[in-house]
Image (tube, rainbow, N blue to C red):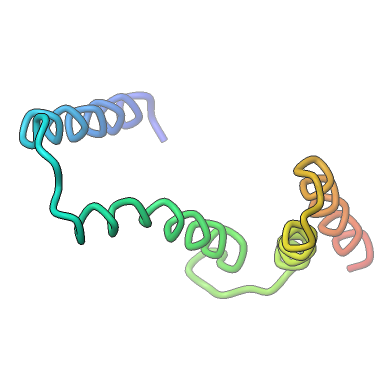
Length: 100
């Protein structure tokens, strides 16, 4: 990706943010819309993780990345400390890649 594209995309993102502030100002969103907007980050993060983990070149794949993310999910579910979750996920991914 070129620097020009990065700068244009960054300016566009900033422009959308400013446009939202100008259009909405200090007004409050309606309650149902506010609840929906508050839940967006919680829905987008798992979706992005799934796409990056389970797809390659417009194809579904099940490889070492899926095993690592699965191990990290289990560790997070069991309330392991964050560094342990990261190290476990990376370790499982490396082990599966070494065995394959």
